[in-house]
Length: 120
Image (tube, rainbow, N blue to C red; front, side, top):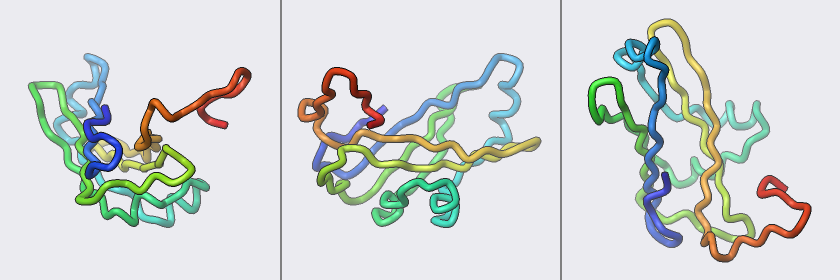
């Protein structure tokens, strides 16, 4: 969930979802931003890294955690109101790099023409 508005320092919260059988994984879960080389390998813009975001994992209640992403400065929105971030998640028995696309621009200024999708 995007908590910041356009022009404000970035603040995002992403709930960590796990099946009931996997709740014990949350106890060993850790997170980190992946290096720039991972963005390059996946062909994803690493522009977010220029803003030096911080990332943390916060326990909200037993079995429920939230990933928080913060940056001290606002994301500059030029032509593209979206920015990508890749979060590395690790737990005792595995790991995954999960990409997210964040809408940092003004939602009222995004126009999707008939036949288009937001990904075009």
